[in-house]
Length: 447
Ligand code: UDP
Ligand code: MN
Image (spheres, rainbow, N blue to C red):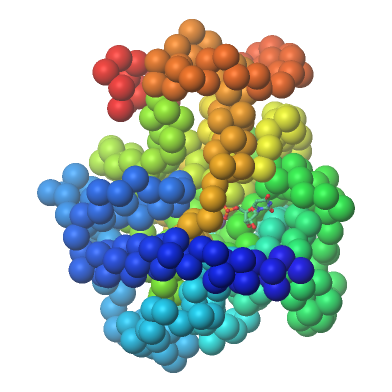
C-alpha cells in the first residue's frame, strides 16, 4: 500500500525536495569517491564510521600501517562485483527507480536487484587470521535478524551469506523478525525464497511495529542456541565470521563480542574493508569510531587479538543467551531505534562483563542514506537517551544536559525497573567506567 502511494506523493508534491536530495546523494557520493574530506554532519552511526574512515585515510598514521584501509586488490574482484562497480559509475542519477529506491530503502536498489539473493564478497581479514584455528566443538548460535521494510534482495543476501559461510553444526537457526513491514514482497514472496533454507529458519511477524529494540527481544525469546548473534537486515558476513565470536564467548560467557564492520557502499554496493577501530561516544551520546591504542595490539595475538571497546556500534554483536537474560536484555521502555547500543555497552562494562571487537571476524553492513523526515526517529532517540542518562550516568548526567539543555525537562517514562536492575546486578558507578574503561571521555571541555 505505502509502496504505491508514496511515489505519487513524492513525485507530485515534493519534486523539488527530492531532486535536492538526489543532488545531495550525487555530490555526497562523488565527493567521497574523490577522497576529499566531508564536513557535513553524518545522519547515522554508520555514517560516522564512514567519516572516520575518511579521517583515517587522511590521517598522519595514528593507526598502525597495516590497519589503514587499503584498496581491495584486484585479485579479489569477482564476476559478481564488477558489474556493480560499473553500474555505480555510469548511473543516470535521475532514474525513476533509483530515486524510488533511495527514498524507500536508502540505497541503490537497481544494483541490489542486479546482484540478487547471493554473491561472493572479498575476504578482508588480515592474513594472520588465516593461521588461526578454532576448536571443533563450539557453542551453537541463533542468528537474529529484525527487519522493517527492507529491500528483498538485501535481506536475502543477509540470509544466504549466513547460510553459505557458517558451518551448519554451529548454526542452530536463523530467526527473522518482521517488524510490521508493509512492503508487499516481504510476505509470500519472501516466504517462497526462504523455502530453500527450510529447517534452519524461523520467521516471526510482529502484529504491530515494535521498533528494533523490542523486536530483537522478541527474536531472542524464541531462540534456543547457546549464543545470540544480532545482525541488521542488510549485512553480508565474511569468511569464518562466526567462529572467532563463538570461541571468545566459550572461553568467557561474560564477554560480548563485535566483528569489524566492513562497509557496503550505498551507491555501488561494493564491499569495502574497514580499518580496525573501537567504538566510543561523546557527551551528546553520539556514537563514533575511535583509534585503537597500539598497546591493544601488542599482545601475543598482535593485530588479530581482541580489542577492548568502550561501546558497540549498533545491531551487530554476539552474546551468550543466558548472559543476555541475566544482565537484563534491553530496556523495553526504549522506542523504535537508537541509544540501546550505548545503554547495553555501559551495562556490560559497569555490571561485570566485557565488550571487545574481534578483528578476525568481519561482517559487511550496508550504509544507508536517510533522506526522509526523521522527526519520529529523533524523538525516539532523545527518549531512549534520556532513559540511559537517568539510569546510568550518575552525577555525569549534567555533562549531557549541559549540551542538550532542552531535554532536561522532557518526560522519559518510568525507569524504576531499570534502576532496580542496576542495584540487583551490583553494578559499578559511571565514575568507575570513566576511570577504567573510557578515560578519554573527559568531563570538561566537551568532545
Ligand atoms: N528495524 C526494525 N524495526 C524498526 C527499525 C529498524 O526491525 O522499527 C530493523 C532494520 O530493518 C534493521 C535494524 O533494525 O535491520 C537496524 O536498523 P537500521 O539499519 O535502520 O539502523 P542503523 O544501521 O542505521 O543503525
Ligand atoms: Mn543498519
